[in-house]
Amino acid sequence: TAPTAIRSLMREGEEPVKLSNYAGYAVQHLMAAKRLMAAGLPAGAIKMKVGAWGNDEVAFHAQKIPEARLLRALRYCFETELRLKSGASSSELEVRELILRLTA
Image (cartoon, rainbow, N blue to C red; front, side, top):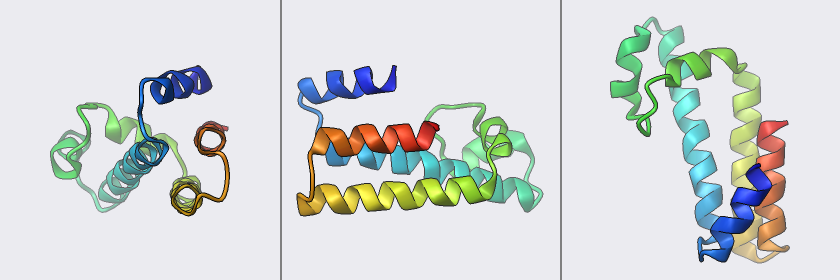
């Protein structure tokens, strides 16, 4: 599960801010793909244009997620990064909450 993976990555020394950034990066790619599809770019060309992280199905996944949800997800990522950098709460808890919010 995602929480188990987060605990494992943090035990291996992965920084919470970096995990938060990975999540934000993925959401940004989905948003870019969604907007490119809306502009008429063929799904096959989106991966090259977006520079997706090796996912040949980025357009397929982006198509399934409403833009409002992606915008909320970007906001969650930004808020989490802000709290992590300010030391406002437990870093593992913040990252776990972010993942739960993104996947709910």
